[in-house]
Image (tube, rainbow, N blue to C red; front, top):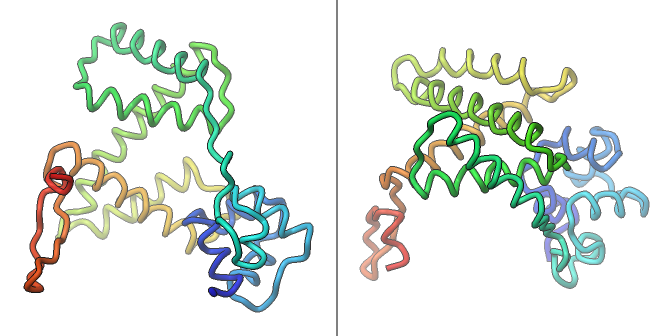
Length: 221
């Protein structure tokens, strides 16, 4: 059975230590000692961690039982309808033409953000979110292509980090955590882009041990 700090890493699921600690209402220093395995949380902090991570407290404390709570996912039908209606209206008003796949991606992305941020269902609030998403998407598109350049990528990545930090990172954010966030944003964007344009490859091992790359869309065939 894995030790507590390994279960805690699974529960945090890649979120920055600083952000997760704030959501739990505990200090970042305390959380880091739990992650390093040098100390264990008291009951109050254990409850706070399990609630923030939406995992069963018995699993978190002992490793027994299922990890996830059965009712961990939320669904707001009215908010989803509002997001879809606002997006459709916005696309018509702005004269935008998207493929069904692109529309689905925008709906999923904006609904997820609106749900997590408890955004009101007013059209103006949702449209503001859509516009912000488009600006962020444009920034990612322009910056990632430059960052991936084998010659100039390093200098562009530094500039990209400065822009993101100014726009999104809190003043007391941990440098290591923020670097990880930037890496995750770049990786997720590249993967999604490769999935959309059909160029995403996945390693597959044949029976004779040979490893070959196949198109992601062909994996389920």
